[in-house]
Image (tube, rainbow over all chains, first blue to last red):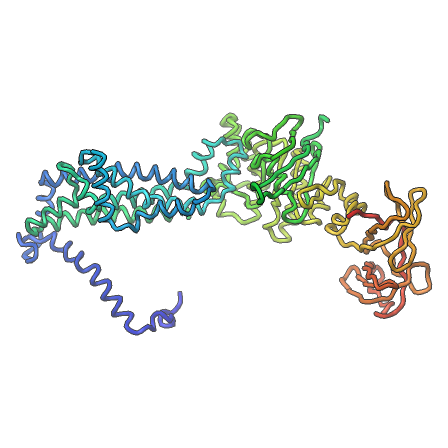
Length: 264
Length: 361
């Protein structure tokens, strides 16, 4: 370890307060939100005592549970579809050499930088044009599409780091194409696929803007339900739901990171 | 014909299309005998690795035939060829233990379960890696990984084992050990080895026969002695060992001998090669150690000492002929370092006819 005092970065004036300000601004609201989820008072902003009753109320709320189930259905389905497509795309892009390949690669990742509201409006108009009935199906379709680049990037990165000689070695040792893929390529790729899938899942679970536009009646997901709750008034119930969602997100992202580190 | 392990006829490999076409292998024909240690030797880009990859099946030839023990194989995928490869980068499967790596080939061949395990262990024993069965490749040193790669390839029971510069990543001492090890393995297994290297010393010490390649073609095939002592082309003479090249005019050819006049005006006797015509301009190749350094006045070509380079066992002298043509003469320090001739002094260079080779371009 180098001595922090000798690192030129730490001699930059005002670095420490700026860093503190950044972290406080970023995490203080979340800490407050988590704390107030355990508040006994009806008013979310006034602390009166510790209680877990809001979590109980959340779990008794049938509408909320339905929204949560919808979210799970959408996220799971979209993740499976998006990860499968992303894996195939990554394998294809890694092997094939064709003109305009860089362009195609950029197009796959482009949804990451297209403003979500643009995608949302465009997708809605597109569905209406095609005469689709809005519902869980359209939400799943939209989520699958915007999850693909998130799943694609870690898988592609993993593939890029793989020695192409490994496949040759497998075939040299009498493994046919299918065996080569199952016995050598897939085990190497697995951490990338899991990592990509978890990222896709959390992105889907979290999404509000696109979902809000393309979800019809009865296709309310958890973020949309929470938004609806807030419009009525902020109750500690919202805090409790948010705390639960945060916990799920943290678990998934942490797992994704851990799996991604395996066998690097 | 039965005992040919590999027979290539007019094998050509082109990469790219149109104006970007590169001919990596140009109508190569070669036969490799069973149980032979056969080396493909040449500088990088000479086509030796391409030839190896065609035999392995990683590339398909643009033209030509390839036979393995009399069977046409040029269009078979790698997994249908009884040929295994030791890769330059080893290409061990990083997610499998040493034992599972070695067992991979037998498993894919669907041999009986008990036999697979026994075979893998036997191979690890053969390369002296007992006790490493459960390690992962990344937990091994370079030399150990090399041995695993060998064991893995041998466990596939190949008719021919292909080795793509397998020793290039090892340090000198380990490389020497592995050279001996490889010879031992070839002897014990009786498998035909096709070995690719750019290291001429490695090729000379290990091979039964060597094919010297350049520009996608095989220039010469022969035993190490033939390749070293009787190079047929300037490239072969130059690539393997040190050589003096002399421009000469062939004065006369008779009874397997020929007389040449060097550009310096001096006459030397040499061996004639088939097709040598008197009156033709030729290039002569003479190894530095086949020349003698003599005192002035003795029979030999008059020359002037330019430079002495003491390298321990030998001294390499640079002498200039009458017209300034420089020659290297390598003298053994059998009686201690030679001091005799200071730079600038007159000497004679003795040339025996057997040392003078006519080489083509």
